[in-house]
Amino acid sequence: METIELQQTLPEVFAGRDSIISDVWHRQVAFQRGKTYLVEAVSGTGKSSLCSFIYGYRKDYQGIICFDGENVKNFSVSRWVEIRKRSLSMLFQELRLFPELTAWENVQLKNSLTGHCKRKQIEDWFSRLGISDKWDQQIGKMSFGQQQRVAFVRALCQPFDFIFLDEPVSHLDDGNGKIMAEILHEEAEKQGAGIIVTSIGKHIPLNYDRVLSL
Image (cartoon, rainbow, N blue to C red; front, side, top):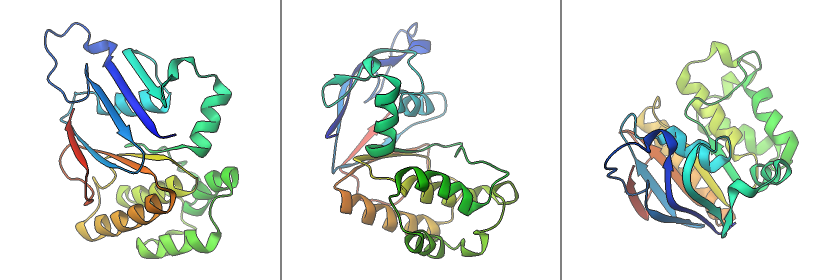
């Protein structure tokens, strides 16, 4: 996948509003593979909706979303499965981890589907992010910041043309945010991938090619 394009896209819930001031909604905007984007937002502007629309979880929007010129609303379930496995990785704000499973088990669930990473690579990421001691701990017993780091590692356990991260450092200190940025840059560069980050304030420190206001 080389391009994600939004054409006059707007959440249906916003349809009755007289005016929408946004660089994304009701515009034509394209995200290119290999580029890095920051989407800045305030609460209530549809940030989480944008993530769900692009990932195919929701279709309650007007306009068109295209992957390489194809309208995603026409994609079959099997097509979406393949896209989420090989082309598009998503780190949701709510993380979507399984609280009863350990950190390693949560990551391994994803990696077993893709076979993308060696265990040694995952162990290295855990070490760099300061959560090696949480490897066998249940997610439900970890802080949200620790969970964010586990979910981030899980998001890397697949090939991707684009990786979408929704407020990935909201509960991290600057040091861990910097380490996350370094790992993210390394992995995206290896795959020639695009990075799309959302933020309502604090954001991961990357060299952004474009900053958009939602």
